[in-house]
Length: 343
Image (cartoon, rainbow, N blue to C red; front, side, top):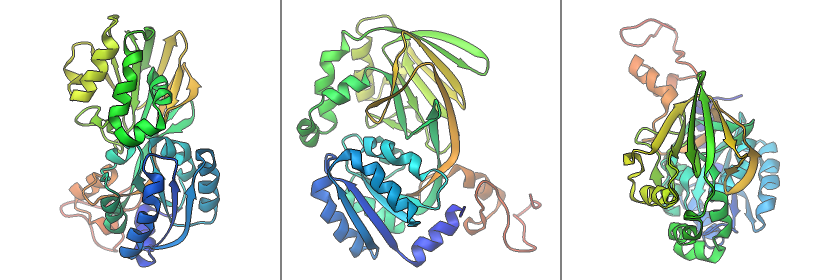
């Protein structure tokens, strides 16, 4: 398997890409042809383009394109689209380019991708290839965010036309009918041999940084080998309303009922059993075993994106071009990082 620097050299030497856009997503249909023009303007040859109008087909299209060994595949869609196809990129010699065309675009935000299609394509043309972590729940991959609680009701109840015209505000409008009446459940979180019980109406599991266009915590990052579990421990019937308003205002961490767990691995049990929601869809059920697949996929990110496996190498004095995946190996014979010895 090629490392990220080898793949970046291949892409920059021969800038070709396959474009796949979920035209059912909020802005997909309108922006598909604009993306084609902008990619050409930035010197990227689109060797194949697929406007996918039926969301259930996008996974088979992506799978077929990956099997053809294309080094760069650009996907346009929202968080649901990326959750549907992300496992297909795991440990492949294929780089993912991101066009955020959905409503919340939390995955793109966690990668530092601009929301404008113009600027997102600039990142694809000028950015760097990074390898990021993926979260796993009961052996199923998820990107950025998974939830246990009422999120599925909100996503499925929000009309597509409302999301198209109002974006994130549409979720706020449709959520009000669920906030007060949601069922309280008991949640047992076990990590490092320690067990804690809370009562909540929603649990957020974050591999990335953003949920609802807000950061989960100031230090949340999609590439730091850490999962974050967030919940509000409260039996109050107003907890759901307080939870959402807190997130909307960016003040969710100030509540005394807020609970934050930063883990590499954990088990979550609920009473009663609950579905885990990934990308707006019901997937597995509790009990849920959480883990991380480190450096699972390779993505084009902005130059400022903090790549944690390179951070230690830079501090040791290694230049960018010397990195090898998962290590700080030195390529040039006889040279060492300043003030140190070879690893």
